Image (cartoon, rainbow, N blue to C red; front, side, top):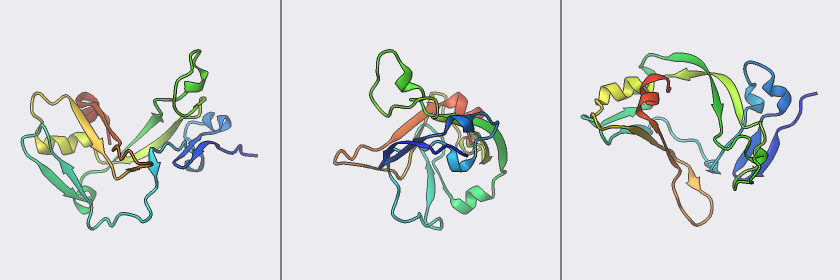
Length: 161
């Protein structure tokens, strides 16, 4: 019998992959860990209106529609995704945040377009060091703080979809 995911917070949803499901090469979608900063949107985004904006330290600002992205070459990679707080509850000195044990990780086959291909089209300036990402997430509570994260430009250009 499959073990249920350990839910740390229902709103926003944060839940661990059961230990038994970490023993396989590919983590099943139904038990892949869930990590959310905010609540799910009430309605899906209309993809005909959605755009990806590339701006900042680039020589050419770009905007892509969903259909523009679908026309780019698709690649598939097998890779691991891990929450940066994975194993937090096992630390000798307790850290704040969700009490992840070892289930904040999973392996999957991901498909998409290479971020490096997009950034090459925009032309990176020599002083570009990171790529920042901002989504449609809405912060819970009254703070209104946007959830924005970045990765080093080397990672963005090499292995990021």
